[in-house]
Length: 233
Image 1 (cartoon, rainbow, N blue to C red):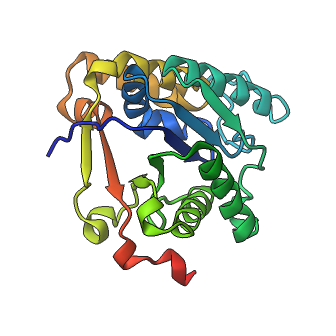
Image 2: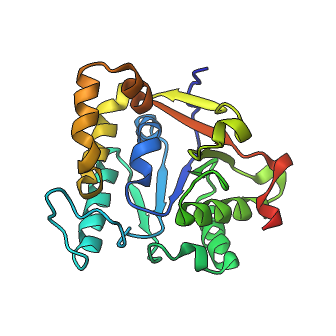
């Protein structure tokens, strides 16, 4: 069931890699910005270990960090993020970072910004080790707060077992009115998205039902505090 995007006081987005924001939440971010809501995007790494170097390749392993940084800035501009934080952690190492250090990083952002909503990945359903480490840090940081002071958690899940274990998404947003901004964010990350963009754009032009549904609807799950697996880790 489609849901109306609520007006928020401040939205904090926490993802590990440039382009994590583009695929699943850029339309939601653009909608919040259209309403004048402040959005802070804390991107934990520069994705410098990404496998893709463009097609045909235009990056090298040495130049990729600078290229991905520039792409991230361009994507943030496309969806009007005014507060982009590059947190300086190393790609593909977040799972090895100290748990308290990771949670403290998020806690510090919460203390500074007092967000009413945090957008990140859902722990256990985010597939990549960096995604999972980020998701756990977010939940741990929010759990430290008294229940009445906790921001809402709207989380992205895409593991194969998501529907079976989490059920249907709690929130489904139609972002078709900011689709051009979303596509601009995807295009900004061209070193990583070139492989799929042409096909997506072709299928959208053909009004392919599955592609339209995948791109124009963004899905989120609220965190199940009554089934908190992170506290067991």
